[in-house]
Amino acid sequence: MLVLTRKPGEKILIGDDIVVTVLDARGDSVRIGIDAPRGVKIQRDEVLRAVIEANMAASHVDENAEDRIKRSLGMLAALQAAQSHQSQAEARLKPSQPEVVPAGPVAAPLPVSQPPA
Image 1: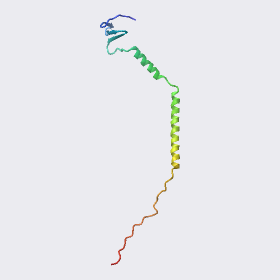
Image 2 (image 1 turned 90 degrees about the vertical axis):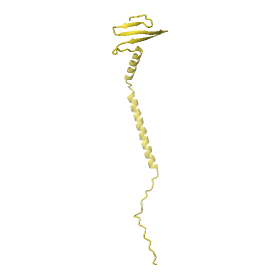
Image 3 (image 1 turned 135 degrees about the horizontal axis):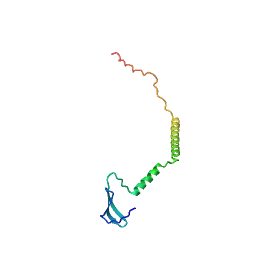
Image 4 (image 1 turned 180 degrees about the vertical axis):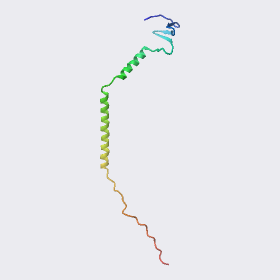
C-alpha cells in the first residue's frame, strides 16, 4: 500500500484518467473528490460489505419456514371449518317461517245488479 501525505487542494493521479483530490481535512476525517471515467466503479468499502452481508442473509434458507407456513395454513383451514359449522348450526336453530301459499284461484267480484225501476 502506498501511503501519501497531502494537503487540501493537492491531487493524486492514478493511471492516466483517475484524479483523487483532497478537498478538506478536519479532525479525524478527510473529504476527497474522485474524477474517473464512467466505466470505473467507485464504491465505499463499508457500503459494499453491508450489501454483501445483506445478500448473504437474504439467501439463507430458513429450514423451519415451510413448517411454519403449513401450520399457519392448517390453523386457517380449521378456523374456516369452524366458522362453516357454526353458520350451519345457526341456520338449523332458526325457526322456519311458514310458507304462504294462496288457497286457490281468486274469483273476480260479481257485478252488482241494479233493482228494477
